[in-house]
Length: 375
Ligand SMILES: *Cc1c(COP(=O)(O)O)cnc(C)c1O
Image: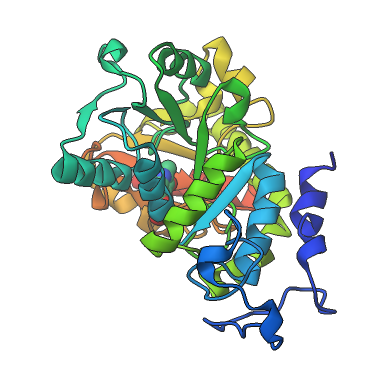
C-alpha cells in the first residue's frame, strides 16, 4: 500500500472524471436522470446499497463527498462516511449503535451533549470510564477519546477494547487529537473510529466536517442509509475544501507534531525561568509504556499549561504574537485558548495550545517572551 502523502493526493483518481487537475466545485443540489428512458430505474428496484456512485440529490451523495471518502478510506484504512461536522458524525455513530448503556470519560463537551440528548429521548444510561464496566451488556458502547480534550492525556485503547468485547459491547474511539499516522485505533481493537475533520484533516480553520471509519462494509452501508435521513452528508463546497486540505495533510500533521514536541521540550528544559508556569500536560510527558506504542509516529500537537492564577491565565493569550486567541485546533496557524471560556468544567488557570506549522524558533521565542511578561 502507498504512503499517506501519496494516497491523500491520488486515492480518488479513479473517480475523478474531468480534465481538471484539482477537483471542480460542484454546487448543484440535483443531478439529471439519464436521457434514455430505458435506463430509468425506480428507487424501489435499485439494488441494495446503491446510494454511493449514483448521484441524484446531494443530500444522498455527491461527487465530491464520494471523492473525500475515497481519500479518507486510504488515510484511515477503513470504510469511511463523511458528515457536515464532527458532532453530526458522533450523532450518527450513536444512532447506529443505539446502546442502552454508554461509558464515557472526560472529553469534548459536545459529545457529552449528544449523549445527554439520547438520555433525554430514550433513557440512555451513562456511566464513566472508571465505573464498573460489567454494567455494559451486548450492544452497549464505550466512547473513548484519546488523547483526550483538553489536556491530551492518552488512554490505553486495547484495555477498553478488551473490556467492551468481553461484554459483547463496542468501542468507539474519538481520535481527533492524534490522527494518522500518529495513532491507529483499529490496531488496538476499536470497532469504529471518529474524527472531527474540522481539525487536522481540514487544517485551515475554514471548514466543518466529521468522519466515521469502520472495517465492515455493511456498517458503512447502514451509516450511509441513515445519513440520507439524518440529512448530515458533508456538503459540496465543504468537500471541495477538504479535498484541497488533504493534499497537504501528512506534511502538516507531522510538522505540527514535531513543533509541539520541541516546544514542550523547551518548556520542560527551561522550567525554572518561568515561575508562573505551574503545570505542563502533553502526551510526550506521559510515561506508561502503552503511550509510546499507541503514538508510535509522534505525539499530539495539542497541549495544555496551567499558570499560577486565573488572572495570569486570562492575560497570557494577549501577550502572544503568533498564537491567536481562539477556540478550536488543528489548523496551520497556532492557537491558544483560555479554555474556561468555552468549557466550564476545566480549571480557570488552564490554557490549551494547538501548535501550527510556523517556524519553531519563532513559536518558542513567542512563548518564551509571553511567559516572561506575564511573570
Ligand atoms: C472539535 C471536536 C469535536 C467536534 O467536532 P466538530 O467538527 O466541531 O463538530 C469532537 N471531538 C473532539 C475531540 C474535538 O476536538
